[in-house]
Every structure is written in structure tokens, then in C-alpha cells.
Length: 474
Image (cartoon, rainbow, N blue to C red; front, side):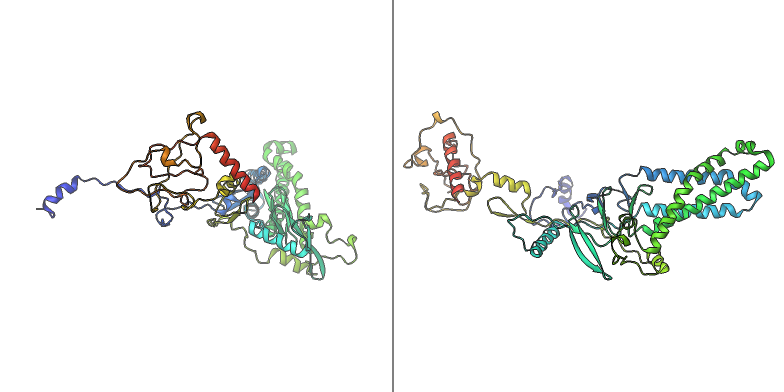
């Protein structure tokens, strides 16, 4: 005999339904019972950027030129390794494809590192931080809140004896640090902003400038390397079969030579320009604006320069890499209720903007005074009990179908009430929502009330006018 005896049979026939707790709206619900889906910060990032691999890759929104750069390097190098390297490694030396491969992988690595990284984006100010900054500006300027104050534009600080201006960014609501600037394409303030480079599909700033410089420098070597050995390949073939025959035998070499010839000048020139900037510890933005030019004055000098070319190069290329400030893969913290002041001065905690506007648009729901039990006698009842369920008002009937109600007429004379032995309590005016009950009316429990449709269009209009007059008098 199985354990349980006769109970085992009926218990097998019982069916249990699982109780769903997802629709529960209890404020005491445990967080383990209901899981909320948290978003990462890159999903709501305010700048014009694109993110891939769950926020690990960050690029500008315009990436078409970057794909062109990637394809040009990949195709040109691929043609060189496929059609030129076999002949050169056999006729000259096998070290040529090895050196070419090292340069190629270094170029691709620095390109992807520059394009996929955070250039040094500065986080925007939160509403609380922006309000606190405005308060500090008001105190510093000594301006009153009622008068017009032009927005501040700059602050001055001293760096190594040189006055440096900090500009206020109206988009990010911050005073930008020294050497920072706002990129109009990415819509971000970038620390030590150099320029926005469409060829790498990203801004060039403090966190990726060294990789950008190594990319253009190594690309210059790779372009010169491919161009030189492609010409060597064509000359070797031309010595045996003739120049035209050599061009017909290796058309890929002709294409490589044309691409490298037209690109080597701009790449080598750009590398030389940034070498000069690194040696003087300047940025492209500062050089174009002439921020530290002697033309601005004899006292004007670059406060960021170490006075030594080697020290400036080591600072730009070998210094510590600062961490990202935007934490794009971090989770968004749940919002806390913030006080929102409505138009009539009532403070509502946790209210949204739409709820505040709705409250401001309905003055009767805010300014209607509550009624006490002493002002409105309740016939047939001596005491007031606990509140009962809310009774929904019925649709108003036409004015011609109801009699005029005077102050002497009570509701008990107009509506017969049914005596209930269970002694259901009344709904007191204090417990009813403000503005839901017209003056002079009493609501009983839904089981003891037969009809509640004695509200006319005229009485509602009179109550609305009375509420507006009270609001205007306040």
C-alpha cells in the first residue's frame, strides 16, 4: 500500500494553477519577484555616434569614407602579395613579403584601434549639475533672477603663466577643459580635440591620437614600400621581355603603382605635419586657429610645451592612456523621484511633466475645498464608519427632466434609501477625491443607492465657475 492510502488517489486528480505575480502592482513587491530590463548607457547616448558589439566599438555616424580607406588598403596590399611578392621573393629576397606583411598588419591594427575607440568624449552635465552651474554663475555675476542675463561664454585660468580661456558649451552644459572642443559632426565635446577625420570614421582626440599618428606614419612606410617594389618588379620584367610586355603580363602591378603614386604625397605630407605638431605639443585645432602664434603678441606662448622635442614626443606617444569618461557599457541607474512644481505652487513628488500639465489645466481638482461632516448633515446616520468603494458618477440628464434643488431640499427627500441591516458606512466628503462631488450631495454605499444621476449641466457649470472664481481670488 502506497503512503497516504486513500488520499493518494484524489491528490493525483487535483490540478493546481500557477499564480502569476507579473501583474501585481503592490508597492511592497520584492525585486526578486519582478525583474526590470536595464539599458546600457550606449543605448541612450546623446551624441551622434554608432555603437557595435554591445557598446565595445564606438564610431562616428558617417562611416562611408572609413570603408573606402579600409578597402583601398586591403585591395592594394592583397594585389601586392598575390602578384608581386612571388616574383620578388624568388628573384630578389624572401624578406620582402615578410616586411610587407608586418607593415600591413600594423597599419590595419592602428586603423581599427583609432576608428573603434573612444577619442576622449566628455560626459554631458546632468540637469542637476547644469542647474547648480547656473546658480554658481548667478552668484558670481551678482545678477538677479528676474532680470535678463546674457549667458556666460568664457572663464579664464592660468596654466604655466599663460592665460587660457575655458569656453562654455551650450550643448553639453559644461565649461570645456583646456584644449577641448565640441565636434559638430559627432555632437560631443572631445578632450584634447585634434580634428574629425572622416578617413578613420571617428574624432581624433586625447585617447586615440597616438594610434592615429602611428597609423598614418606606418601607412606612409607601407605605401612607399609597395610603390618601390612594384616599380622594381616592372623594371625586372621589362629588362627581359620589354616594357609594354611587362605591363601586359602584370596589370595588377600597374594598378598598384597608380594608387600608391596618387596617395603617397598626401599620406607622407600628413605624417610630416603631425610630426611637427607632436614635436611642438600642439593640436591641429590649435595650429589652424593660431592659438599660440607670436602674431597674437610677444607674451603669447604654448603653455603645454615641455621645451624639448624628445619630451613632447614622449608625452604624446608614450604617456599613460587615460580611461574613458563616458562608461558606455555601464548600466543606467533607476531614476529617483524628483520634485516637480506645478503652475499653482503645489509640489508633487515623482510627477511627470504630463501629469503636472494635467494638474495645472484642471483648477477645480486642486482648488475645490473639501467638505467636513459638520457642514453637511447625513440623514439617518449618527456615526461615520470606514470608507467604502468609490461610486462612479452617472451621465447627467437633461435639465428639463429634474426639479430645481434648493438649499432646504435634502437628498433623502428626493431619493428613497433602502435600509440595510448590515449598516454599510457612508462615503465621507473628506475621503472622496476633491472635485468629484458637487456641493450639497451625499454618496452612500453602492448597495444602498438606487440612482445617482441627478446632476444637471447647469449645476456642473455653476461649480466650474465657482472653482474658477476661488482660484482667481487666490
